[in-house]
Image (cartoon, rainbow over all chains, first blue to last red; front, top):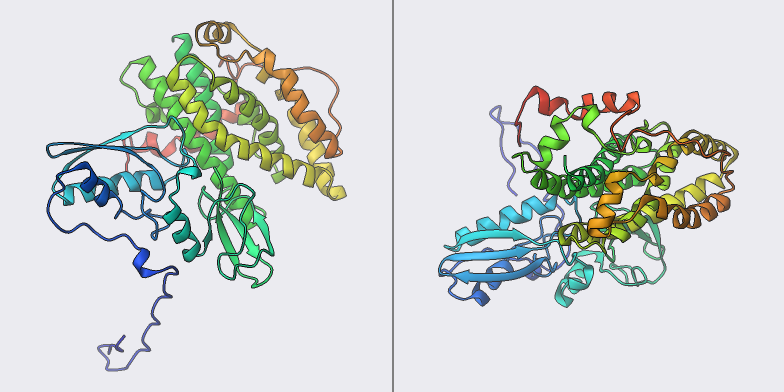
Length: 185
Length: 250
């Protein structure tokens, strides 16, 4: 970043760059560019590029909330299953889907299906790997298996709830870093 | 009001009133983790409220929405249990109130996952996963605080003594319960008492707390006949923005 001058001519110290977001940059979903999808597989490809608003390295398809897609002409009907009942990200996700599909030249129709209820079993294997790279321990029947940063199994729970409804707060006693665990649900 | 609408309204008002009460802790929790946990639990309950009251509004078919029901009704139209509208008090009393309700709520929702009404069963199946977590957490805290320091034990015993007369209402059925049980196979409140005792009493014993004598039960919340004065005060805060600026949105 280049230092910018104020009107008085004095120089201000440049602000430090924000800390890099952990995880691989290649994990990030990208915006759709290209022709309008003509098949349901192509619609799925667009959805795979929509990031989760809270955990931007995983997409909504990694999260396992897209139940079905049907394409009739330009009308794309997408059924989603929300994660937690009160999760504030649900509204943001619906909006993101509508925008992405409209961007791709489609007319989105969103439907919500709560039954069967969403479960972390629907997280994709790729999604789990991305979570770990991002610093969030992926769901595991017996709780997190290891610290997502240093891989030590020497970990303990700090709180049953974390920064979002889907996570709990843990700490690694080896590297001493706190970390989020994506709860089994 | 049809029995179904009343039944759904009761479920939604329970989660709405407790959800709002818990949200009153936001930014005031005794520790950051507890603050977040209470806010997250409140979110789950408000989310469940949207589903229950959303269904109630549709079943009622008067063109109202879940928001209209939550923000546009006055005290006498609420159908929540009296236990849930009791003020937060200290952290111990808040946790005790949740603990007493969570285990009832869990039994109720487990029963509701089996009803013949697919939408009701679907909402219950979603909510029960969240509530199992609430019940685990409140039980852990009741034991930790009850069997904690002299001070925390005293506060938890005070909380139990104060809230115990509100426990009975959870298990008193009426004609609405009978009708939904007959029509959909919904759980009958009286039948939940024994499994609730089985779940709750050993935890209270582990927490070294003494269950108060007497089976007196305050009533009037789920029928709407006689709410405590606290609900009105709560609603003036909860509904203020919607009433002052109808249709406000962001």
